[in-house]
Length: 143
Image (cartoon, rainbow, N blue to C red; front, side, top):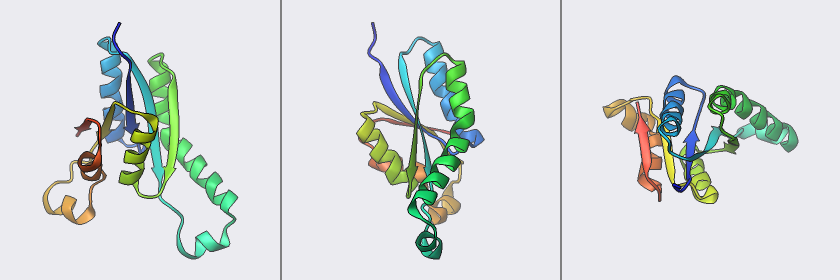
């Protein structure tokens, strides 16, 4: 019997993220035993809004928006007959992905990229670049 692979799939609800998740589900179809952890990272509320809105309301907002972003991916995992583990982070996406991967003991991170290359990718920054550069486990990046 093969060892279960714990895979973290960061998702923002985009087509690129669904493609990454489908890659993981294809592994399952090929007989790989996988535990799927989905992660959505919400941007932190900053500035005046953060000081005017009660912390509980901000946390509820992050949770609600995160669950909306995860909904399609959750349905895909459940449709494949797997138990889904859902996580929501707040703040910098790259550091959240790295932190969750380590905390959850993931064996791999699989994520989609938007395919921004060259100057555009350099100027805008890249979550994928940050994750690939800082991960302690293999990272699979899919366009």
